[in-house]
Amino acid sequence: MVDHGGSLDRARALFPDAPEPWIDLSTGINPHSYPLFDLPATALTRLPEPSRHRELAAIAARAYGAPSAAHVVAAPGTQILLPLVYALRAPGRALILGPTYAEHARAAALCGYDAQEVTDFEDLAAADLAIVVNPNNPDGRVVSRARLLDLAALLQGKGGLLVVDEAFMDVGAREESLCGDVGEGGIVVLRSFGKFFGLAGVRLGFAVTAPDMAKQLDERLGPWSVAGPALEYGIAALGDAAWADVMRARLRKDAERLDALFSSFGFEVDGGTDLFRHLTTPLAQPLFKSLGSQGILIRSFDGCPHVLRTGLPGSEEEWARLEAGLAAFSAGEGGSR
Image (cartoon, rainbow, N blue to C red; front, side, top):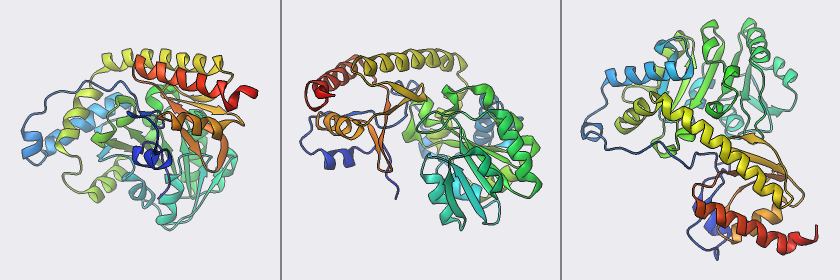
């Protein structure tokens, strides 16, 4: 399995003497989750009703700007959709615009594709399956809708498929989303529920695509693919546009605050989204280890040793601990830089 952020078990193994509780800044999950509420008992005691599933698809279509509910497939997280989406085409050459979320290459390879990352967008034209994470994880790069549509048309002309992972588009340049363009065919857009709404454990995600491909995906997922509690939270949260607007403003301010905090200790943020920030520094590994020893987990990358990604603190106590952690690093091994 590819290493990912969000594992406190791994953090404790790496830093067994770190103080607890841990501050987990290793993911891009919103620390200010959608308000929890009491679930109806039937969400747990009965199989989910198909009508509730259809209601979720309709609400998701409105929230994401899809043409209709027929273009939306709900699933227990986008991760489970990856091999199902890639199986929509016969295995060939899969090119992923990277560096990016490693699960795309892994899942494509498991589906029989010759999968590799490329760093030049123009190279994707040679793919049978092209994958773009937009905004990108971990650096926040955004590819314009116009360029993506040109690529989709080129791929469709030769029977190929463009997959755009918009897991962080809720806090991205939403005008660049391709959710409204999937009716033209040859495009699958993936949307994550748990990141923006801070409910990753609910395990809910969506594929937005042309109705014929949506039907194929729905049939492969089978009945009752989304659990009752996930249906209830998805319907409530995706339908709450007022909460989303307030949260986007809050996250923008938090991201600016995080940039200023790192800058005050000599670390300049060079990318990211309003849910995570990206830093490039020769001190990446020492800083990762120093903060880890203080019970603060940020994200490092084995293949990119000078890169760090950090999420947002969720409370004033966490902000204070992060500031103290950065101060301790600056006063110690980082003080001579």
